[in-house]
Length: 243
Image (cartoon, rainbow, N blue to C red; front, side, top):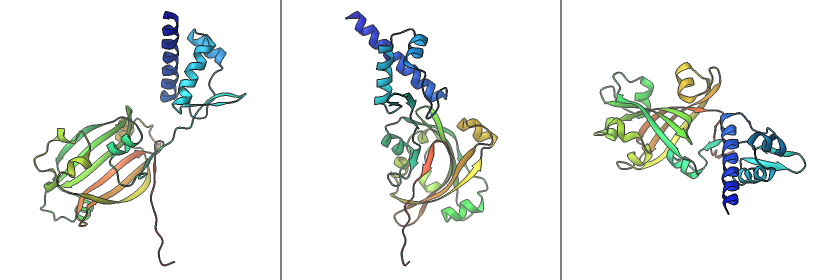
């Protein structure tokens, strides 16, 4: 009985270590893993233990086994923004079965909002606007940095600590969110974003401008977000009439 417990603990340990190596980029997408013999020698265990660890990773859709050719790292799918309609980051993470958290970098009143922000929110210069900057993290991996601009009526009485969770859930206490218009373009990583998103300088990012509206077409917030292009893809629905 004791031997079986030890074996189980060992294959769990091996499985976790291989998964961590994939996460850290030691083994990359489509790469063939070392042979069962080599892994057994490295981990100091039997080939049966390695097989059990590989089977565990296969069940998690992390590894794929090709008959007669060995085990390979599966290509990890990108997070698909818009897959299930208009969702917040927290909702999308839950739909993928992943754990999310938010780091609030700043929340403050904007002294002189840019014309683009005033225009997007359909506000006058004398109407207070607040900027919320957050970093969103998925399974402990930084995914996006967002700069969100909101009229005072939607954030009145709120503090920086109130924005650690779902923004949609927070705003829907005051209004009903209906739809969002987005524009996506590719940019190169700048120093600040390189550090926040753990992406090398010069790599591409997806810069997304969006305005989110209430049912009566009133703008609720204007958002400039930066997404890792290696982890995100955007899905949109296009309609064609009168052609």
